[in-house]
Amino acid sequence: MSWERGLTWVLGPLAVAALVGLALVVILAPALPTGPGPVPTLPGSLASALAGTVALTLVGLALAAPLGVATGICLTEYRFTGRSLLRGLVVSMEGVPSIAVALAGSVLLFGGGGVWVAGLTLGAVVLPGIIRATGEALEGVPQVQRDAALALGQDRYGTIVRVVLPACWRVVLAGVIRASLRCIGATAPLLLLGVGFASQGAEFETLTWWVFHGAGHGAGPGVRAVAASLLVAVFALRLMGVYMRRSR
Amino acid sequence: MSTTLPVPAATRRYRPLEWLLWGGGAAGLAVLAAVPVLLGVELATSTGGVELHALGRATLGSVALALLTALTCVPLTLAAVVWLELEIVPRLRPGLQTLVVSLVGMPSVVVAYLGMVLLRPSLPVSNEVLLVLLLVTMGLPHAVGRGLLAVRSVPRERLEAALALGLGRGHILHRLVLPTAWPGLMAAALVGGLRGMSDTVVVLLLLGDGGPLPVLTVEILHRAGSSTAALMALILLVLSGGLTAVAHRLGRGPV
Image 1 (tube, each protein chain N blue to C red):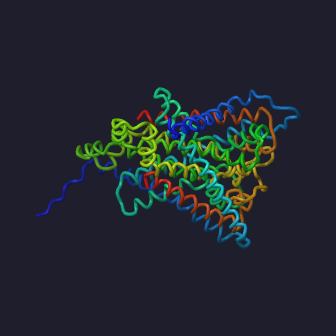
Image 2: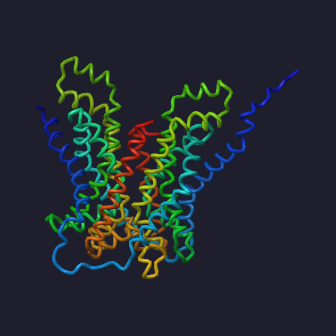
Image 3: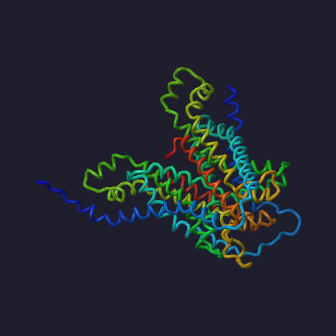
């Protein structure tokens, strides 16, 4: 066995086991002992945090999903000057940290926060991802199907709606699911946009804020359960997205 | 005599919807363009001068953290990708690959929580080491996912030809797979390293203000409302956007 193979057999399983172990530890976290000493309680309500997370995700997706899919279709299915440049810019924007987008979003706050501004900012954060996922989904449809539709008298839009999108809607949906995960797991941008405990006068609270506060100030099984359920939910949704991509 | 062909009925029927599609596309691009514009507005309207010293230190800190994460990601990504794609028992391959790729969406706050509550009390390492460990953990699924695509891009015919010529697996890996997939693998490590530059929550919780070097993301949070924060956000936008574009180009992405 050469040294490359030996290294691969040591480090490869180690990396994979670390990732799988991480998931297992967090899933089993609520069952772990909490240790000695009093467990601080959080001044928030779980229902309010859940409602905040759902509302933010819905507002973000309401902006990002239609605009992202439309932009992805325009950039992939139509040929026009500057298309490559625009696609490059979209790809670049996908890597921009959410905190930078949140600072831009905070300009729109005008002194107040709220679910709407935070949700729209999260929408802007996930928009490039949806555009790229839509583009990749459309590129996966064979060109011969478009040619056949055009030859049968469909125009470009009819071809997209009747032939291309039905062939790849699962992959587009997987991209939207992936974007929703980013909305659910977002924490840093919300710190600029008014997240906190509603009982202490904050505009809204989220599940991630619970975990963030719990990590910083120490918290008991409640926060562990929230962290574990967040991870399981995100993992399950992600897995669903992966299988949707494959079942095209 | 010139005649014009009649416009097909389908074209006439769909035209308003097509305009709507183009409107949505233009609006999507406008939302993306609004981000740097709004940061420019913030820079122009916020009070106080730019603190160049803090800006330089934070930029240096972010680049150093990204570099450290990327360098740690390189061997782990290479090993994980080669093991998952070429060495593992074929029956286990799809399941494990799916599992690893599914870990991409892990919320950073949960990873930070795990590090703070479960790992920090039990691991005898400094906060800085734990930070890099957690950033690598978050970046690795991204990097492995991209790395798998790079290794799969090696033509099957070449692999079979190498096997037919009697080359061992080690030689195939060393002489064929790694040289062919090298740009994609480097792009994968770069994507993993970008997690180090873009993460806020893990750095904030593990280091707070006490790190050896400040980083852009946390400094933006602390200095929000000042010109320095706006300029930091613009620098972060250019740096991370540029590196993402480079990673996509290296990985033969859709740029």
